[in-house]
Length: 170
Length: 277
Image (cartoon, rainbow over all chains, first blue to last red; front, side, top):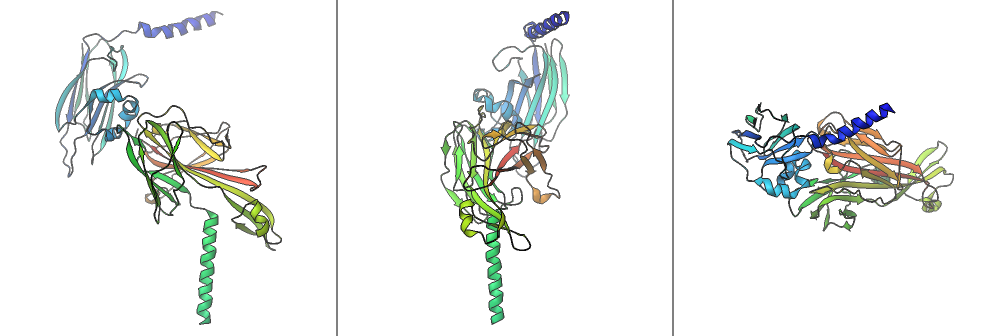
């Protein structure tokens, strides 16, 4: 009986937990520096880029950037299309912007999810998927912890991406 | 002169026999290959399909017909492709996909019947294209161990426009059928996949399926994945490498109360892609 009670208590605690969960601070922002590297190629096309955040359950939280051309090729961002794009055309329309040339870019995430709600503190994953016609694909994952402490993470260059810097600050 | 005549006759005979044999043997698995499996273009897009029968995975060979091709729309209704062309090594058709959801493209065969029997002093195995009714007048005297088999093959693939459908397609309740428990658009290399096999509308245990990846010509081994369905008809496997695959499932079983056959040999040839993780 006691054990059962304890289990019940633990269970209800677990269920109740989300309501205790704290949002990240209002001032919390993640600045992202992103480089499209110069690639020597006989046929060079600007890459398609998706940058997004998923939560611990691997559910998409927010698409931060989406640089694409015609939507016919959205599916070539294989992972982003499967996890985010195909499920919500409104998100696609809301975040799509044009492809970018070689260069260094800086953008920020305001800590809000796709519905405009501040996300809870906890473990998340930062994703970048880059595909280029006549070129390759890179799919970059980085676990991050969003809480009340800042961090600065550098992600090493890949074939299709230069140095990526994540700066989470309050 | 006589020699030449005889040799011509021999050649002719062997050609006829060979032709009959290959049509009876039906040994080349029939399959369909779409140009793409996923459509992200708003408003839909055209896709092209190749249909052939061959021994190699995605090696075009025989001009299998595609006149029976049907597209099962997300709401379950059937559509036909606009035009089907039959080439020397494959048939082709196009279809304009405009509705959101999962579509099944199927090129189902007609049931065909083969009768096997033994004859002569040496128990020679023979076969002919005949069902139980037809065989009565065709079997030679003294034929024994006579069985007629109904062969039926489904060649199919799935196309997903935008968001995949939640509801699986209804079963026809005949022959061998496959339901994709893992949605076709969610098959990812290194992740587990589950399908379910049904025979005459019921989940069927013991169905054997072999799964081979594209590019068989350019590697030494088939790298085949072999699976057998469990008590609930489920088959589970993990495609380790991204690419296009054919799953060939087949099931043999005796059939009762069928005026045309004693046994059934039913197959499903499913083409799918495992996307990059």
